[in-house]
Length: 235
Image (cartoon, rainbow, N blue to C red):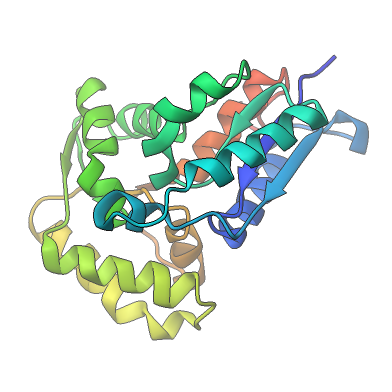
């Protein structure tokens, strides 16, 4: 009997929908009953994670813990979060439950190292994720080289994420800002890109970009399928 997945979502809603869609699309299933049971709590009222990390904003952990309790009550066997920045709070969340959290950060860093050996990854993320060093530590543990955006590039990425994808803006509204960051990192030596904010795979898709990249949402979906005893399509 396959295990079940609990998605602690809402950070943001489109990223949560993207993760659910990727789990479904990546599951090697020949019929409906071959798919994994998934419980989703998409609470878009969870306070902003970057603001909490950098500006002393409202603590998101109480709202995240409430979602965690709801997923436990549903019967989830594991928990996944489609928000990279939220993983900063994992050390406080993990003691609150016996359910295992599957780390998007670890899954993505391992995949990036495996898929692009000897290459330097440009980390595209929120200022919260970058300031917390989440991917820097994970990539270093994998022996992978990386580059981080400078202050101006971080500001441009935040525009893409918050005033672009999260705001539902058309892709042409943020194309220039996103491409400027990518081109600048490539000029500095980035060979591939780690889309380390769950809104950025959506931006990549909307803009039709054809560049070497690793998608943490996709890697988390793969990890969750394997954990639950399912087969990943194509593996």
